Length: 64
Picture 1 (cartoon, helix red, strand yellow):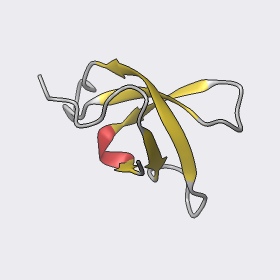
Picture 2 (cartoon, one colour):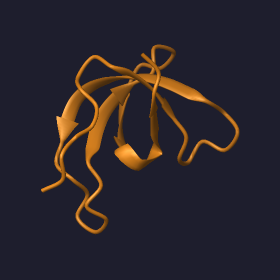
Picture 3 (cartoon, one colour):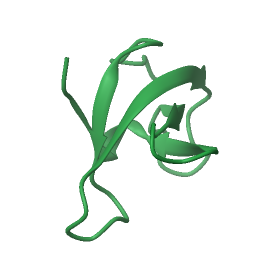
């Protein structure tokens, strides 16, 4: 099982899957690693959206 580098409450920039648009989100929950790649996953929430999404650690950069 992979170890999560980020913690709940941290702010991160999401890069994977958003093209040139930079998405800034806050981590709301730690989740198990993805099945195939073993990459830790997180529930994240962008302040400008009403929903949360799942994001893999490999597509994140720490901001705070």
